[in-house]
Length: 132
Image (cartoon, rainbow, N blue to C red; front, side, top):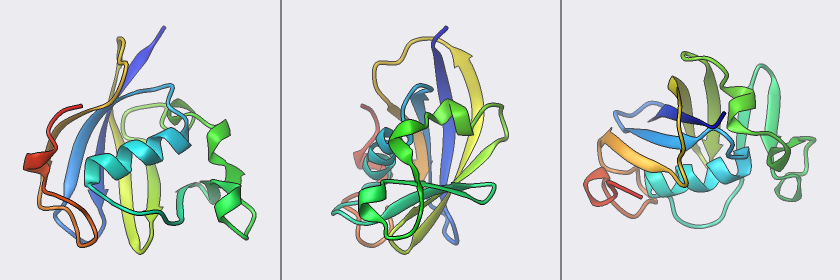
């Protein structure tokens, strides 16, 4: 059965956050693209996901050993409400929390709500990026 995840993504050390709905079958690499769009990040740079001492990223972008983020799905890392995943994009650290997991279909992601302007280096505020 297909599942839809409700995630809250917070930029650590700020009041900036986004609540998004995403298909649970997204790979972590695909989730990186969604997070960049939801937060308004621009450009190309290193990113990684971390959980329980494991690091998931694109091996082509890292000189250190990382697990290939294209081989893991969000539902692998975020199984139950309350589970967390760290996401680093450049100098910014984020905390992703699974708030709810519901049966259903989602062809793409959707921004539900958020707080605060996007951090420096981004391209807009939450008001300008409400649905997808």
